[in-house]
Length: 302
View 1 (cartoon, rainbow, N blue to C red):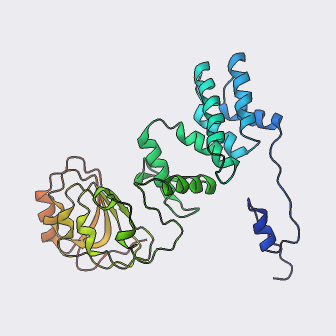
View 2: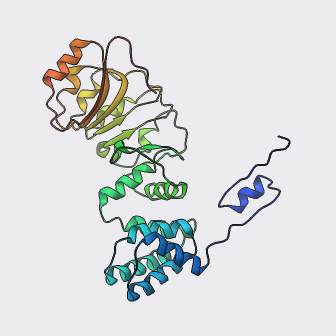
View 3: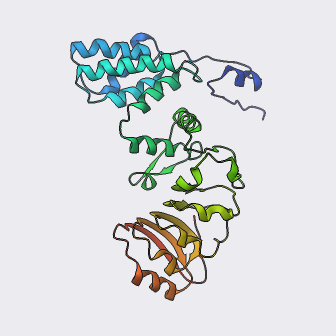
């Protein structure tokens, strides 16, 4: 459009060339001094002289990459033990040598911080966030607490890269999913082991018959899909269900009432009778979040 200017940001010079950019401006990495200053600022506390020397080496290992420095500072904030700092420096150096074939230097630094999440539950939570669409506002109640978070593009790319080499994961990110992948293409034993099926925002219009084999399923989210109804009696197969998010799907009270592990329930009951069947029969002591609607007219979902 005449009189308008478009500014494009990318980490790849090839993208600039492909787009026919009239002027390319390279954003250089931070200098050693700037990298050290940024690390100090993000640590938010003074360091002992012994730790300071190690921290300076860690800052140099980040190759002047601001996101890497900020991420590492967050993982080391509050660490006082000099041995912990030495181990962190050694792990960072070894990870860069070991992962020399990764896409770029920032991935190496970010993956180091991921590896420092010693709690496997935190690692799984981080990877799960990577499954959301790029620049998506993630509802934190689905993963930890109330509010919203947004994942940096590079962190999301790294999460997807980690999951793509995990034999227990099957990732189809940014594929504009319109139908379920062929089950024979899924990793071995994943069907029986699968615990979470989240099709939020996809264009899938039906679930395959083999879904009844997902005996360990504990999380099912079908919001904003093209699926209009579930197979009759399918919910009775999921005795381990903890999170059921089907706000526009009509369910029977007798199907969901037996679930003792249920923590989140969002669904629709056809009439008061079905609701009463559920409410008088349910035995879910951990149920803490629910959104239930009743009536022949389904609610409008925003």
